[in-house]
Length: 314
Image (cartoon, rainbow, N blue to C red):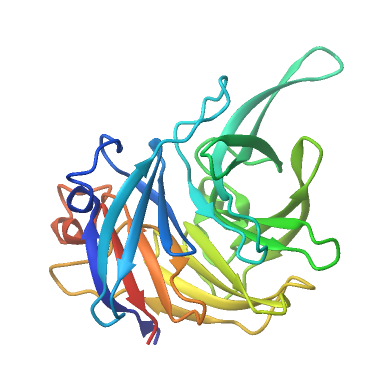
């Protein structure tokens, strides 16, 4: 039997930001990260970023909305929102936010002159001045609707360069029926290139992580940078997994632990989309949830939708 997360606090975005201007017309939260003392939330239908704060003890924390951040992207950018967000906690002077765009259609010309349609993810790096830089992720995705849903950033010990971990939404990084066969989660690892992030290697999740899909990840490295505590969230399975990753060989240490969300017959966590560690000891997480796809039918989903939640591992 899986262990059950302990809910400590929840707050709906419409309440947390009701007196703060500059936000999205209708929030669909997709990713979250803690950077220093701030919590940042991104949305799949909006380029603005929500900045929040958490105060008080974990047994009775208070969540408050602080401001909406309006970012600037290149003039020709067609990005409408983001699937996940991360920061590099392993590099002292890296204050950037890293956001992943799930999948973008590309039209490539072959030598023969014929055109080929590809789908690739993108990473958008947001500097302190809120200016963004876009780069392609050099990995071919199956479609525009099944791409990367989560992102993590670490530093490689050999070359002191960042490595980007992109979590595929579908099993085996596929679409359609194969993507829903549980137990084949994949993380694609990239390293910086001249004009794109080059694919470096693939990490397979342990086969006991039998989720139907995967919606975001976060990673915190130990002080030596040799191991990282990884948390992965599933929207369809409504579960969370925690495992330890060897950052030198990119191998899992054991099979990790799966956690269920707290629930009762009236209130359920239905559309969990983003997750991040809240503390360095990796005992507390932040989760953001979007609206239920069947909100008219699933009344039990409404209480926790369009909200941010603080939960503790038992």
